[in-house]
Amino acid sequence: MKKTWLLGFGFLSISLTWALYNAFVPLFLEEFIPNNVALIGFLMTLDNYIALFLQPYIGNLSDKTNTRFGKRMPYLLIGMPIAAIFVALVPLHFSLLTLIVFILCLNLAMAIFRSPTIALMPDITVENKRTTANGIINFMGGVGSVLFSH
Image (cartoon, rainbow, N blue to C red):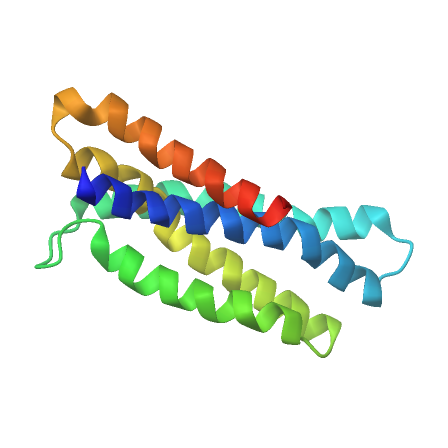
């Protein structure tokens, strides 16, 4: 269960990042694109387009990966630090171009580790404990979402 709780922090960080992203990026975009809700809305859906195409590919790739770190960990070890860098850079944008580059890089990095993070739970959990483990990691994801909203 210790590994499950540690994995839960991955879900917490994903949920917290998306809560921050969805709250602040529209405000940043509005600095450069005032009164254009449609364009801001489109730019806010870029993460969904990236996730739609990249996450299944990365998930499938992680199923076939075999390293000394395991199947999923290389994606977490690459994607999480890159995402952390870009989540910190987003508020430091100085133009619309840098903002879009930062959010695209953040979205790509998040897509690199999202599917492998989800797939890691069954890899590290015995079959009869997976329901409980799933509840724990989803609870942690919920905590991440709630942390920002308060």
